[in-house]
Length: 303
Image (cartoon, rainbow, N blue to C red; front, top):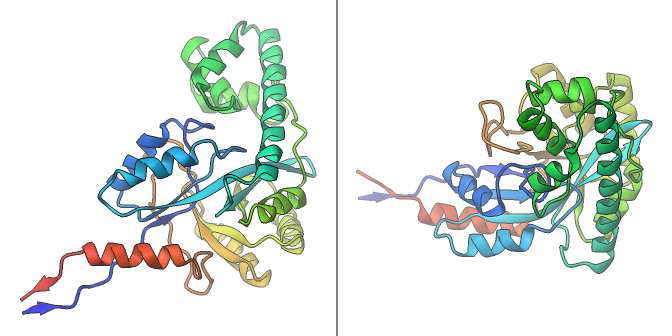
């Protein structure tokens, strides 16, 4: 006798990167990794670019296993000297105005990369920019590319060491980019038909008081959601973020901020959100659709 199929919970990851920004995997490799990790819904959110999204959809179209690709982006902003990241989900990747705004971000990154290279040259690291550009390939040059170059070519021990000594805030090769405001990023995302999410809120090296001020601003500016589940967040800090989400009527998002496979960060791993919060995908028809596809492909239980 065939019993009803037992529905499995969807594995949803709404924050990931490819080589189009500072990820280590190509778009194709990321899609295959998502399948390996049994992810059902994946948002690709490269820094300040949507360049990899068409390839992502084309790659998934060739796969047998269902996986819903969410068009996303992670926009760099500045708030009181903090570099704050705002994720956009379900953005229109073809919106001309939005693409022009992201092109402005790309120009800012290019200028910053040139200034970082100049400062690193004064630190004794000559010729870093061509290497960083080569490492980035068709993607934008980020601080992570400079860190990898320092590790691979100049004897710096680790990427963490590269940031702590040279590239981090206030260090010898740090360059303050002229990013837009948090409010502006939210406007851009909404203008492209998307939802704005405050990314990894406890990773900004600020006190709880400052974090509350940030979330206040984000909510008042029309932000839609806040990431409440991501790798490395402690129970105490997750409780704080959950409270901030609830008190500001923000939806809850979850994302690994995946850049490469590691023991600390993996696609779709440990991303459960509190049952007291409303997930950002609660009214996404595409999620309901992939849930049906996943459960239809699941085997029934025979007695």
